[in-house]
Image (cartoon, rainbow, N blue to C red; front, side):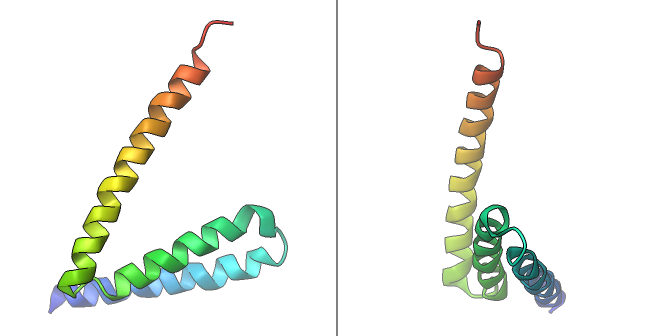
Length: 84
């Protein structure tokens, strides 16, 4: 039961991020629009985290995001320290 409460609070944080980023979209839509889309997806994943199907999907997405972040981190160091 305590885990569901934590997930609900995390979902509320996600909803708050959606509202705040939507307000910012009106001012700087080119920069903030991708963030808003990502936060909406994450909020839905957090809301349905206590269901087995969505928990498995979230774990798969987490693994993929970790691999992509690692590759981008490596590429950024290669780009930063490449010979001139």
